[in-house]
Length: 461
Image (cartoon, rainbow, N blue to C red; front, side, top):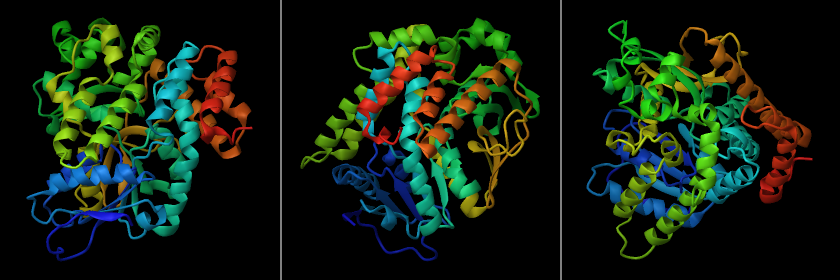
């Protein structure tokens, strides 16, 4: 252990609920801790263990958490360690939020892809495949360790590409690993706000894969309000996805796509915008966060204030290239408040306290989508209780969505096969068959480029 970081008051009565965060030196960890500080119910988390390979980042984040906890009675105790096995022992919940290769790796993913004229985004296209190839072996090792050291723990996966990584871990943990993403939640909330509905009372008909899904209905008191939105061009163009995709395209689809589908529907424009940018998203975050961590460790720095300023800049620039390409303007204030930590807390509450909840999650298909096999991880509304997350019945996908979902799931399966076998040929196939990679020769050059910059891909032969 490298230090406790935060001193709390007397120990609570009752069971000690221990949450381990892998990637505990990550920038967004204070979002999770902030959500925990607001949870005062029986059975709440009492002890947070941060694990990271970088001790300096752990120290910086524990400083932020200490300032968050100041004045909060009986705040969850925080400890930090660079020992993975130690972090996992005794955990009731494990958040996996790792970034294999760091932000330099993300920047390299973007650079190699853009040099070939294809998308390098961290979860979509060539960049997502490269990130998956180096992340899956690490995630599988974590899953095996959890199965051995904390077999009763629930793993909540934040690690991107979230659906792919969750599927890799599910082969060792079964349904005890659940993937989360705040993107569908944010989309549903924006649609509800535009329609004048309470997001907490609206049923969001959402289905697909992580970062590849569509809202096909929004029901309030049993009535689907989405047709009203699709029939009103002014209303349709008044929120982020409407501006991003354009009202005419959304009306043609008859659904509202996840924002990440902009990379598919407007791929040429997105690639040009990324190529024209002074810095890729990964390079921007790499430089921004390097400054944050260095300054947060300086004596006298108000770490929480610094973190809040840095986060505001980070959120405001999210998908800036896509919005610029679409002429969508700046993000709305309501969309800058985060959200994945709220999904995670709601999921933990539902499991730990049997507080039934409906959440959009990444889980095994189990027959929900007939075009995919039962073990395929999909992103759909789930009923969550003490026994875990159970996908709810959804209508079949329309043809255009079925084609994309099946193609991308086949690519994910090739990534998993390549990571298990070490087959370079299978990795080339994964790149070549992705809808956003337009040539087998490009796929071969991508594998060459990525193996040249990522030591973590040396296993490909």
